[in-house]
Length: 483
Image 1 (spheres, one colour):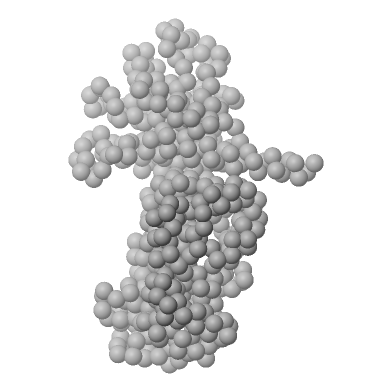
Image 2: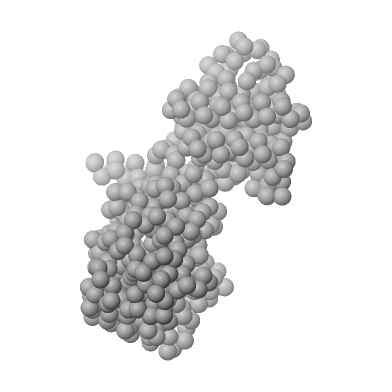
């Protein structure tokens, strides 16, 4: 099975059946995705009515392609798929991606019967199916993509996504935060290859260090649980379960025809398997950022710096409510800073309220360095605050000091560090605002240097807490196993 899926990710040639000159057609889109992504293998458009599509010679039938075909992307009507599979068998094609939809996800009896017929025919012919009703694969190293604007820089996050639309959205949202992907698969109705098969593959894939999953349901819960439990012992598995409410469960049936199951059952499965559970798309992306950039932290003691008094208070609340510890500033740091300015000990604490530093002639980067060099903190969180009474130049100077503190810690590898920059409510309507521009520029600088950036302390705290819990459990499990 692992070799079968690996072959799907490494095709030397791809045929797009249903390719068309119609720019609104899915066949045209897939052909364009492969060309625009820079796929280096052979691309064969198949359409009996066109001679040339996007500058590529077009073939009237799959069997008329002169070379070998490793992988077929099917964009034709479902009623034509069985005949296509027979052509694939004669052409010795091993795998077919069925973008084709309107099958079992519709709930229609005839459509369900047709999907079952397609599944049986593929099995008889020895052809593996991806889908139907899915976007297929995204593999930056081979320059294969299921959309035109996906980043071609490879990384180490692998994603298994039942939904096609969400697969693209997850990649885009995480990419904006600096995350890069090893491989992504959108698998839809899972008539053949399913979530368990892909989980087995990704757990042994050397290019993948962290696995993301969006799953709506499964047809074999026992096998999935066994695979999930094995996978989490090897690498983190972060899961967002779709269909947690009554309305959501109903939607699952019409989306991918999966058996959603009760959320209580799924939560038990995730807890027992030690998977990292996300409750929303935003949290799934936040967790991908944390696990992608941060090392395996097992300590809970957090040092917080930057931001004004109100943000410091809320940061304390949100980190402790997430199960982390906001401990006092160590005495040796207090004594050192007191030698710089005796007044500092009257207010200095953890979090460090940066709004008072201006009057004390102490830069926040100096305090951040002291905290980073202290062994009592397991992690630092730096708030680049946007609320201040200072005029533009001085405000930017203070924010830059916080950002420089982050960069210093990261470059000197003093301590794991996260940055909280901006506000989730800031949007494109504010792009002309100088504060927005400054925060955006600094956010991009931090991301470029490989520092995890969050939009608010609460989201940072929630992601870090789950990361610490995962690595703490795995460390204990390995220690117990040795005993």
